[in-house]
Amino acid sequence: MILSAARLTRAGGLDGVTLQGQLVLRCFLYGAVAVAVARAPGDTAALATDAFAARAIVVRHAISTVFGPESAAAGSQSGALGWLGALLWTKLAAAPFTLWLAPVAMLLAMLALVEIRARARSNAWLGTAAAAIAALCACDAAHAGGPLAAPLFTAAFFMLLDRPTVRRAVLGTALALFWCNTSASGLLGGVLALAAALGTSLDRQPVLERRAAWLAAFGACLATLATPAGLAYPVLAFHALRIDGTLEGIVSTAPSEIAPVAYHVGFFLVLVLGLAIGLRALRFTGALPALVALALGLANGANLPLVGVVVAPLLAGGALRPRTTVARGLALALTCVAVLAANVGPGGTDANARASAQRDGAFLASRAAGLHDVRRVFCEQVAWCASAVAAGGSVLVDDRVDRAPSPVRDAQLALGQAHVTWLGVAKRYGIDAIVVSRDSALASLLRLDSRWRTYGARGDAALFVRSSMRA
Image (cartoon, rainbow, N blue to C red):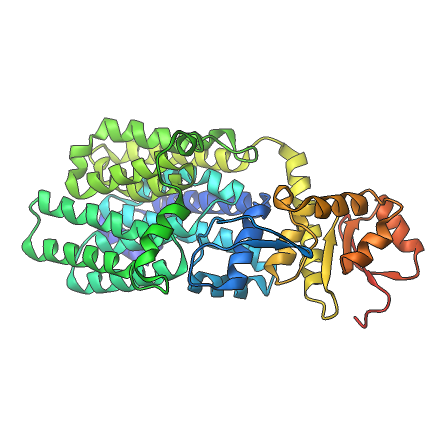
């Protein structure tokens, strides 16, 4: 057990004060990261895109989208969901609040796996430092709604690859099979497993370990063919992950508008510490997967969390030689940097207020989508409607408004500005539920019209439905 005092005492002769200090530092890190992720605004465009994919549950990993009564052929979307991932997504969408809790749980689970792996290679202090580096590398994903499935599965996968045995290889194959059917990022499992297996051979590890490592790599690669997409999965996954290494992909490592300025800190810490320790000190078994992770992070900034997951535990093991006091200071310093990076971003209080308002509107939109007689939902703030899409509802348009046909964009504008034609627009597009700000002009018109009634309110957002509805 990770917090077992008896186990830690036997391992390193730690006293009670040291154990309490480690516990406080760990809780400080995990709590601060959880708060930062929970209060950060999500990427609602990605939410809506994935929700459309989840609705389809198709063999291919790419679909087209539909807005209103017209079709907007958006072509291939992010395509990151497999059929199993789509099923899991629909279950999460059934309870809208879990859509905000899921990133918190996934990120904390990832940090815990990184810490456990690092502690097995070093000690408790350096384990916390490794978790802090992983948190820094995942800052953009946490703040901008980036992919967290890949780093979470990678962390679990490397827990099995660290000490390869036949049993662990079988478990790794099962995990890779689940990963590939859940997400396009399952392709990365085979790539990283091959790098680790090659490293064990170059390091001339014991024969049994080498066989187990290659068995795990073979199983992970075979798992990429065990999806409904069959032989097409590797090609579809490669395109969905956008790991082509183009200039556009490399530039995407820059922080997004809502990501903290310290986003790059984790990446550069990995580079600096890696150069200080030396890749050869990590041995080929660790160095090859580390180089693959770095390459993936440069090819597409969305993969930067993988750098922390793969490399941070290796750095912790390589840094074990210094005295314990150095490890404590390093853990404390990295934790403080991670906490600041996670919680100090552009916007400050205003950003938090916007995130809270977004959640209020999104909650009402998903609630409207669940009403039996509602054909289509309109949201004054288009980002709110992403949650309605995730809940299985039909909307006029979500915040991928640039992909919608011109008539649909005009309808959104007419309703949002309470144009004189708003009633006709609502009737033409079959809108039965409207989510608006309480003090907006449209909200005032809805209160005065007997054909509409207030169904609910949350924060500054209000939900109106047609009076004829039984709900």
